[in-house]
Length: 335
Ligand SMILES: C[S@@+](CC[C@H](N)C(=O)[O-])C[C@H]1O[C@@H](n2cnc3c(N)ncnc32)[C@H](O)[C@@H]1O
Image (tube, rainbow, N blue to C red; front, side, top):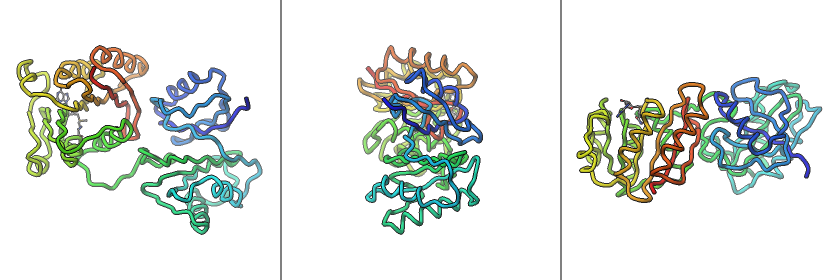
């Protein structure tokens, strides 16, 4: 087998965990290149193993390097030619560039515009907001190009730049986490779906569900967005901390299709609450929960969350989504 090169993207806050995930696939994986220089610098690796799995918690993507040239300058023809051969004309595309150790004079933005326009002239269609595919140009001591045929998928973020700068009006930033989770875990929320949203205030997650036709019971001692309550009669707000709801009242709530928990509390507390309310889910019901990773014991928090939920749930998956900060999102299906 010949070793292949990849560029691997992860959130720099979880670099150590991402490296451990790569080593779990190939213990002898080789790291090369400049290492992490800026927040959004990808990891460069060389391995014989297939590391493009989608089951990672902390790795956003591992893309094979399509092209690498040592003596690059300002001429981007080879990059454009490589991408013309690789990208699919039926899919929209976006170019992202990052200069680290640069022999090229143009700025990253100028490179993106130059390569993007050249590809458009060759019949490719650019879409900067929701591209179907994305190509990454990294300028280190060599020029490296990787492209993803699947596009940025649920990753709305620009992988090379600081945080996502979404202009959508929002009730809370959390709303985007639910949007990303619904896409990543393929969760259907539509007319008739009954959702229990614990830690719901100010109401971003609730609104996401309500807009899709679901009816929502929201539990939170804090206030929900006033406009939301007016706009959606399908929203019921129980203005209490979940600990203040007695067992009998829980059972009286009837069954729900989806249980959401997005509380700013420790992993052990949120798993305890999830277990308590899981009686409201039928077999096959879905749980989605934010797991806070407040300190350095990240593997332990994740292991505990998995283990504690496995009594009542199966198909447990965790993912660090683009809008998750020091936390991951847990998905599980009721047994
Ligand atoms: C990050 S905010 C939730 C944001 C919400 N998902 C949204 O999209 O707007 C966390 C919320 O959890 C609530 N919370 C914390 N502990 C709770 C508990 N035991 N029961 C209910 N809510 C709780 C807090 O009051 C706070 O409003």
